[in-house]
Image 1 (tube, rainbow, N blue to C red):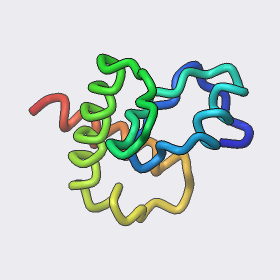
Image 2: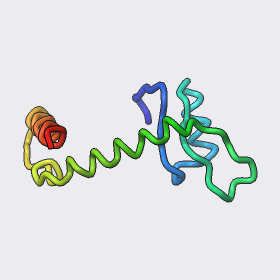
Image 3: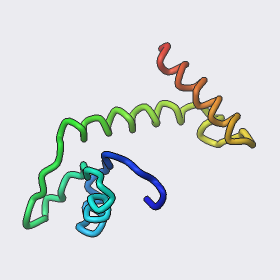
Image 4: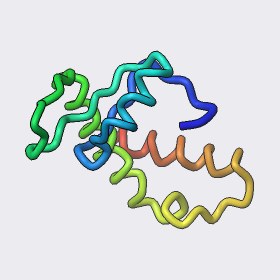
Amino acid sequence: MEGISAAVVIGDKGYDSDKLVEAIQAKGAEAVIPPKKNRRVQREYDRDRYKDRNLVERFFSKVKQYRRVATRYEKTARNFLAFVHVASIMILLQ
């Protein structure tokens, strides 16, 4: 997370640690990470924002179905990003 600024950090239960949540809040961001079931004190989180995480993960899963994106055949970052855009357009047109 060094060098990255964000207003909201969304993660799954695997990232639920006091140290990580405190680091996120120290940077001035909101941690949207659901607490694990075995926590003694259940922390509050924004459930509506957490639902958006699922949409993003499903979209990345669809983009990775394109072989050139999954294996990164492109040599330059510019060309790779261009093909990610093409794959995204193809998904949105379906």
